[in-house]
Length: 168
Ligand SMILES: [Zn+2]
Ligand SMILES: [Zn+2]
Image (cartoon, rainbow, N blue to C red; front, side, top):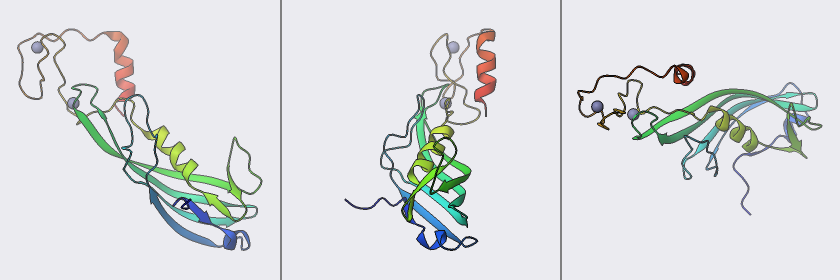
């Protein structure tokens, strides 16, 4: 079995607290999806981190990036973008599953960190572009392509909060 690109040897760091090194690891990770968006199966997820040796472990500080695709919530056309999330996580030889990631022997695996980060960052309400005009709920015209003559219905107040939440 080929070794995962996300597995990093850190034996040298474990023996020298205070040392640091940089690692950039990329590879496809299957199954990264939420209801409204997903990382394409063949796309690369990249973890670029500085590893700092501390007593009993390693602190990984850096960035996780990955492309995503999903249907626009307003017009249903394919929307896409890039996740770029800052991370700072601790890997420990005696790890606490609630708080830190494990070090096995002299190696740590950045894949769980990549997965957790991407799943948190995938958009739940993607937009093809910020000002997408959407599909008219009355006549079905894609208002990005052509205006329609329908009178805008008052916004259902139950959706207003959700809309405000998903704007960012
Ligand atoms: Zn759209
Ligand atoms: Zn219309």
